[in-house]
Length: 406
Image 1 (cartoon, rainbow, N blue to C red):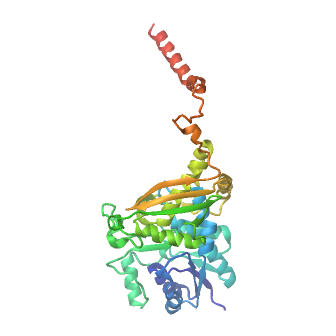
Image 2 (spheres, helix red, strand yellow):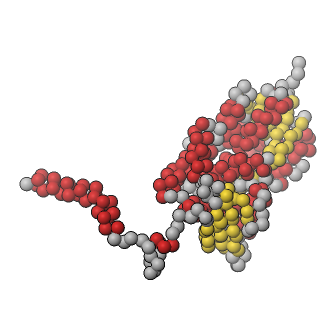
């Protein structure tokens, strides 16, 4: 009888490294590791060799960077999706693509199950499992961290050492790090106490703003229909735009976030993030929207941005509501073409210039000089009508109170 096949979402970190060995022992199945290259750096070095050495019969590594940027990151950017108003959701945006990759590889390999290394109180279990259930309802799902015997990361480290599983994590530096082109998430260790300031070694790609260059740097980002298409009039490849912005922004201390956030399961967690490119692009995109969108569309889109962010964070990318809201978002971006120039300095961003052929800004209407074309006399009637409901209300209440007193 042929062995069962399990496709494992494999990053090479502590949990998934231990998981390959544990699944081998528990299920006596053929383990196929699946890794998506979303722009992480050191994690990919020697990954295939490590997976095979740990017990996998096959290691599949796919370069998904271009698809990640154009089909996932750009959608979130156009939507202005920042979870709870701050977090650009690098990890959350990558998970639906990785879930899709898992399903594709499982189908190609004839696998019976997929497995992930997410905890029972984390967000990623939702993102992976809802994604897999939506895309391939018949696939089985295994979540070892919800059932295995290890009670802490320290016990996992002991298991890895005992079984000669190569890991980079240590008890002295027990951070859990997830990295892709849109940002880095760091948790665990001393960060679990929100009264502790993040130590210097928690940050991976950004310079401490106090130690960043004493000279500011100016960048220009060009957008077409809400999508960044050029950086500094030279870089046009989507992946290279993000890589360069991470490099430049990181050098100037841009994109450090220390957040208390509400997880999907209802508990609060403390996370440290680094997202230079995401922080810069969200800033530039928002500035362009303020220039181009009409008032009511701009205001309504803020509500849509929050809802889209919640859907992404909660693992509901492959849903009818997400698709419907993105149809609205795409409609708002049809004229969102133009350039934004930003100065980066000591962890801060200052917008220097915004320009667009679709700009709704009129200097003749906004100016207070002799070039002013605004009809000030028209405002008298406008103010009477605009304030009429509240004037009427006050008059009515005052009259009623007089009668009650009498």
